[in-house]
Amino acid sequence: MRTFLLLTRVQARGMLNSFVPVRSGVAQGKRRGRIALTVCGFLLLAALMMGYIAIIAWGFAKMGLARVLPVLAVAMGSLVGVAFTFLKANGTLFGYRDYDLVMSLPVSRRALVASRMATLIGSSAALALCAMLPACIVYFLTVPPQAPSIFAAIASLALAPLAPTALATLAAYAVTWIASRFHHANLAFIALGFAALLVFIGGSFALSTNANGSSPTEVLQELGQVGTVLESSISHLYPPAAWAAAAITEGSLASLAAFASFSLVVSSACLEIMQRRYIALNASLAARRRKALPGYTCAAKASAAHGSSRARTPFWAIVHKELRTLIGIPAYAFNCLFGYIFTIGAALFLGVTGLQNFIASGSINGIDVTASQAAEMIGTIRLLLPWAFSFCGIMCTSSVISLSIEGRAAWLMATAPVSTRTMPGAKLASSAIPFGASLVIATTILVASEEATPLIALECLLVGLGAFALWVCLGMSIDVRSPNLSWMNPQDVVKRGAPVNVCILGGLVYTFAAGASVFGLSFSIGLGAGHIANIALGAVTLGLGVLIFRRTVAKTPALYA
Image (cartoon, rainbow, N blue to C red; front, side, top):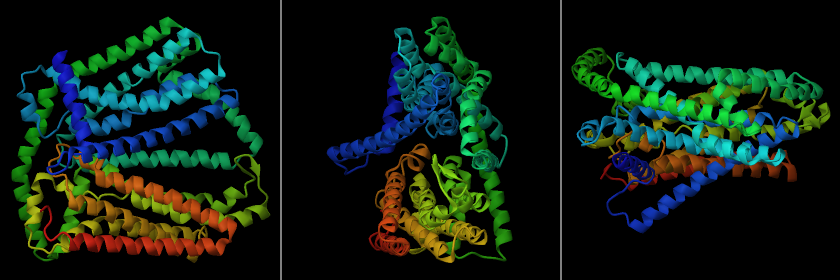
């Protein structure tokens, strides 16, 4: 147990250091300030998530569907960390860079695997707490609480993520085992992941279409049936959630014991299976890396023979290399490609559903809207379209960490015979070109479907590109000044690095604040003022982004110096 706790402590400290890496020359007090700022940022996001869930739960309670909240809370707590665990297991539990060093430690293999699983389960438990606590609180505010029910709810908070997280880890183990047999496994993994995302968006679109085609009375009747359908569906698809819900609603200790036994037995079985096959999987991954060396030589020769007829300039060669790097690291691709998909997906959604038809359908949040009122509102609401693309722009963060992602091989790029402007310029272009193309396609769809006027399309281009230029260049400048080249896992810089956090969190604050200001300005002064504000903000942020990039290049005579 002492060894397990020590290894878990090392994992926790490693995760903390990945948020705020230890660097030479950085004072301890300054680093503590960065840690405090990071913690405050995550607490703010947790508060927003819990507030949103509390509003939804209160809506269910007001409709007389409080009985659904326990089973819904357990289902959310069980599933909220599954995707996170599935994506993060590869690199945390297996396939990490210090495998040889870790396996040489005088500790048992079971303790090693358990400590790394504990990190994943702890992260899922934190997400489960944010998802379950608001629903449980709303339930007990609606239904008089009893001591056994409260005890069951507290126990469910800790037990809910155990089995799903362990199963997600085992699934990631199996997928990685299969992927290690294929040469282009990363590309296939990314394609399947985004296919699932498109299926999810399509399902959400179908539900929205059905809701918009119903009258307010029909919508309320459908919502009244949601409770029974939802409770029955969850109980059939995941019976342990029904056991935990019975323990909360009825105070049944037998149901709680069954849920606890299931969670502990499943997680223990997954741990035992993985620790028995742990060495075999990592040996397979190591063999794949060794096989890639001669293959890389042959591929390089073939590429040289093929590329002799069409030589690339250094700029486009670096852009091509950056795109291949993005596709070659699944965690990198999943976190940085969402912006392009959301940009085109949002335009397709609005082009098919029709913003004007949705507003004139008769009900918005229970408020009756006539056709004349909808015509007056449509211009003001369209002012928010550019800020939707602003949100998409700050999600295209591949260039933000493109220097740190080089890792310990950064010296290869640093010694390349190209100018300092060419190197960061090509890295910026590797995300600016795809986002610009996505934005042009999206605005073309909106104009063709008559959901946006040419003026709105211009505003979408300016605001989207401006937000992208400002926050991506700002994050990139932070990464150039202080790159993290000693990471052990790509997710240390992809998800938890300071540059990407500044880009996304700062961009979110800017997008919501500026969008709300433009919306209020159009109400108080007129639509003309809103259009002028959109164009002005887009032009100013685009200019600031260019200025930040130029200053970054001017103050960085040699990369990674």
